[in-house]
Length: 161
Image (cartoon, rainbow, N blue to C red):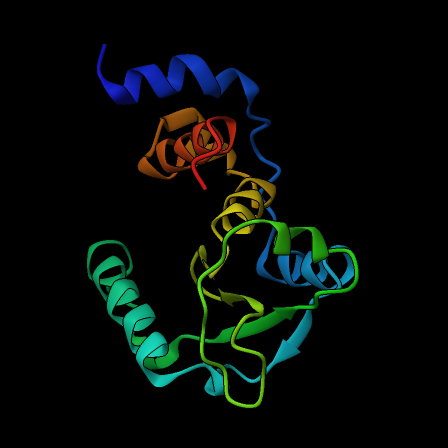
């Protein structure tokens, strides 16, 4: 059995399709359930922003050729050490330079037009990806988005963070 078939067999029955959160719902979730504080995306180091855009550029060429990098709309959040998201400071996270902010903080970046999440804490990234959910279309058609989603479930289960 190949890896895709294995993921589908093991994890697809655990998925509730069609409950995919919108960009606005994800922002609300971060603010309400993680005590996330919105910060200016431009404060994130230029090299990090460029790396995100290079990665997204490859995705856009393959999947959304009608959307250009200059049309992307990023929203960035800092997860405070106190509050509902503080538990994630118990997990490893990568230092990220954000002007005027603590480089040891946890940050989350979302993009409005595509299913993009960037986070410097892999445990939080996995939790947010799974919380976002999967569309019914992806579920019914075993798309690569579903396979990616299932791999995130496996990563959490195996504690690959």
